[in-house]
Every structure is written in C-alpha cells, then in structure tokens.
Length: 254
Image (cartoon, rainbow, N blue to C red; front, side):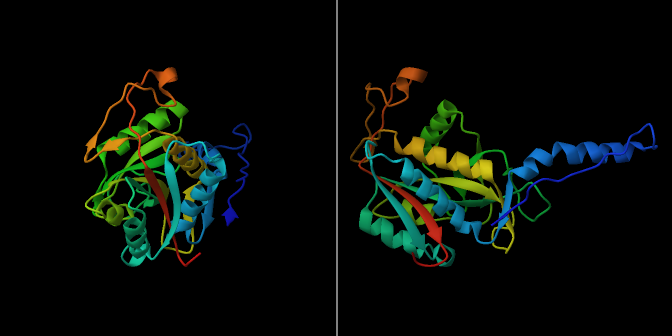
C-alpha cells in the first residue's frame, strides 16, 4: 500500500514575478487539493481488501453485547458469479445481508454515469444492475450515519454488481443492502480510495450492527421500545433481527 503524502509547492512572489490569471488559478486549485491528497491511498486489489479491512476493524469493535447474531463473512469468487456469497447465504439463512465492497468512482473522466466521488463519505448502496436494496435497510443506515455524524453518499451504479444480489435472492428472499467505498480504477494495479471513506465504513458497520431488528414472518413488527440511539434523537421505532451477515469478498481463500 502506498500513501501519497505531501505535495510541496513553491508559489512565486507576485511582487517579484508577473503571474497571469491562469497560473494563479492553477496554484489555487492545487493548494485546495493538498488536504485531499494526504487522505488518498493507492494500492492494488482494494476490491475487496478494503472491505475485508473494514470487517476486521468492525469485528474488533464488537464486544459481544450487540442485539443481533452477526456473521462476519469473507467470501470468494464474487467476480465470477458471487459464488461464495451464494453458498454462505444458503448455509446461514440470514434475515439481512450486507455486502461490504467497493463501488466505482464517477468523479474523473470515464465511461460510467453517476455521482460517486472519492472523499465524499461512505456509500450507502441503493441499487445496481444486480440488486435493488431494501428501503428499510437503507433508512436504518442513513439514520446511523446522521446520528453518528458519519459522512455518507447514496450509491447508484449503472454497471456491475456485488454479493448483495445473491444474498437478496437466497432462501425465498433476504433483505439486502451495501456499504461501499468509492474507488477509482478498481480492477487495476493502482486503485485509489480515500482513507476517510474507509474509516466511515467501519463506523457505519459498527453502528448498523447495534441496531435492533425484529421480523415476524414476512412483515416488519414496529415496537415502541427505543433502540440504542432513540433517547438521543427521538426515534422510537425498533426493528430487530436474528441474523445479520456482513460480506466482504477476497481474491483468494482465507
């Protein structure tokens, strides 16, 4: 992993040297991006090593008192048919399946369409060609982010897919969602992400895992019992669940 550290720039003194407007704009633009460059990391195979990293860090935060039975899953062969998540979902039979993955950036010249941007927060998956995420799962993720001041962005892509698709279609239907780190050049040897986005993903994994879900058959039972953050933000609805799956894909078996 390579950390792009500081970019040092010496700006000529305008009193000693004439600068045209375009040069001043260039210097200002470079200076405005110095902080962002310090938070950017470049490496191979962030897809999906960064997802596995987030799960490991979230697992460290889990003190065993969470209300849900959580399975931190490190699957294989997502790129060739989501094979690992299919067998995992069939075996565990979760109530909710969350794919912790990357998503392509749209903030540079490319053939993709969308609004994903590096450094704008962790992506809450809404949809991709393979899955339409559960609206209640999306809403809970948004609540967690707003309560914990976690920067987030809604993630919609028009190409590709993730393990949420196979979990969604398993066992007669599973509520699915995604926590996605926006990534440039995902399948190249020099993929790029924001450290802050990855850290936001860890915080969202932790906050979402603490949320109480409860399902009765195929319907959602709403309780007046407050969930962990209700006293602070006035939320009284509680959804609690038996099993929660957080899935991260690996290039090879663990």
